[in-house]
Length: 302
Image (tube, rainbow, N blue to C red; front, side, top):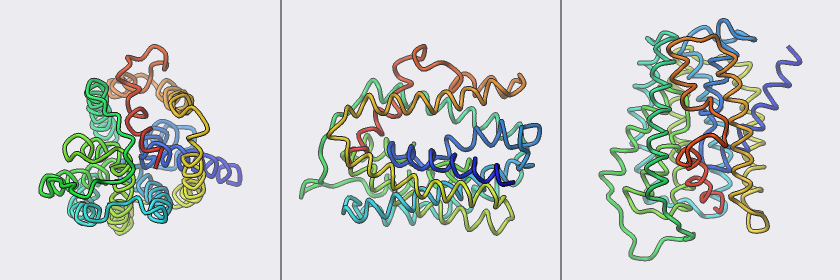
């Protein structure tokens, strides 16, 4: 048990640092690890249902997002005119997602989550073809955005975040940048606030339904909260280093861990979907697949 706790703390430290650096909640790292290593048939079978995987992951997302959000608020980077209505819009979807995943079987989670990763790959490809370079840290005085579109998109983000136990920033930031016209830096900070609220709603519902396994949830959350502050300090120092190189190296580490977990799992149809997305070596992957940290990497300047 002592070694488990130590490993969970170290995992959380990494998840929190990476999540804050690129503007995601860490669930994209935790969920695959939970599926392939910590569920039934894995090395440490802590999880026995799909709902336990997503519920526990969302607790970790919450810890990471909350810690990172406080840092962004202190720096006055959150655009509250959009953050508050967007956050409230995630409430229905967050509760609905936690109830729906209660009926998921393991294969259902694998297939739906793998399909979601494929969708993310398509988004990355589109982002690569339409990449925005915006070093704007503040909004112009006459800035406007489509509030109805933003609220609707945020409702969907809340649902996806809760049902998969991930941070909605991976979807929300590109939506804010490309559909609503926000500068990348402002979108990342504002999305972090929305993510924290959405995760709060989802966690309450998952806890109520008994989906959370507390040992990994608490330990990884503690590590993630500390890691989020480390990530924010790395962001503050970005002007002294090559940002793109840093993010590529960090993303390689994530890929090695996730890809190894996928390969360690016994072959199956649902596993092939995940391997298509996260199983290839970084240098063999199409350029579009690295766009996740290229897009969210701009958020590192916040």
